[in-house]
Length: 115
Image (tube, rainbow, N blue to C red):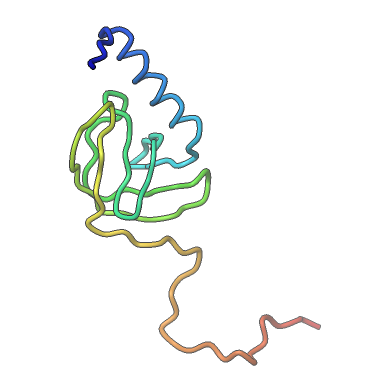
């Protein structure tokens, strides 16, 4: 049994699938001053929409809304069904403080009060 679907119907189904992924995802990828929506993300990569996003490469930042999640070094892996898939060469979790190079005393005061 075979099913034939016309090109227009196939393109419409693909556009609806991509639109659904864009609505359900808050993830964004930022490179330089440009921000693009991420369709989906997995352990070692993510995907963006073909045609709407120029070819990405190198160092990018991944955000969930306004929360900075990762700084990543990426490489394009494949293009399939309206998505460009990127794989992480390196993915470093973002931190909101500078890493310490010493052990902080747990009994140390948090701050000093002036008189």
